[in-house]
Length: 444
Figure 1 (spheres, rainbow, N blue to C red):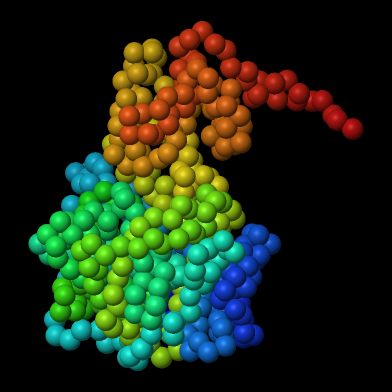
Figure 2 (spheres, rainbow, N blue to C red; figure 1 turned 60 degrees about the vertical axis):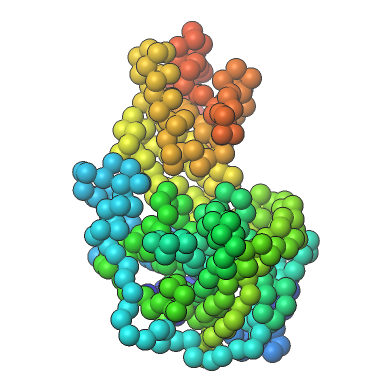
């Protein structure tokens, strides 16, 4: 699905707001987007036709800003992505096995013949493309939703990810590859050999491809097969001479390379925590080719304090992760990750509690050492007697438990144990019992 087709889907649902007045991408545009997110439970898809006075591109925001839009994007053959993941064969027990199964059954192959059908127009400068600055403390303007392709040194795997790109001049930009990211690890493997690392960037790619690229899969090179799975069948992509994908339906394609040891301080930028990140040294990409479709459309997202689009996407990602985490840990009943905590993330897990403390210790150990759950900053564990649909009440309980049932794992993950009270002789106040005693009482 192209970005333009996805926008048309929203337009058919009367969810697109066209803004034809000139809007400055430096602070003004993002302020308008953020205001709409705060003011509307269903914020419109916002298509800015004049992002700046001289831009030949449009800018679109809020593509993923509701669960209904995400469901519309990720559904196939009248089934949601969550339903399809739940129906994977029984031989698939976890996300690593799912990645292997998808690579066999939903491959993404190289299109024979030519490279990309589009974009067509050669541009001289990155500054011909609209870049946003969302908050006043941001060091400079940047591209916020690029799909970045790299490959392993032996060309065995293609990696796709979504990272902030901030131009330094007309042909150079910083890549926000932080320590711990897969792209950073791949770049270090090239740097250790003193080799240039080829990179391609798709701005305005197929939105399902962008979603697959930002999804936290456990295996290197799994994003393209996951994209094929989302689309419901094997996909083909054009590749360039460097062996990297050039998605033909993308609005803008950047091609270039990263030198092995060339880095520069990126500066500070606002992020999902509501604070500015500390400046870190980032690899530099030299852009050798900039191509764009005629009247290209650039997608953006605005990060910051919720409500934001990325917070909702983060919560949806955890919902999808749980479909296969539960296969590995069947004693898990539900997972809740509210948008406000999705990118920290703080995850609430409802667990079927065993009959004794020794059984709970064993169960908790399995939860704490699950590969996908280790991605959480904090795990809050509650039992089946807890109303998990009221996160605020759970947080209240946790703050009262924190002195006694709070642990920091060796890898830094925090665990708040809201189940151990069952084995300590404590009694928890039952709100349900108190509520039932009020039946028949009329309050005037």
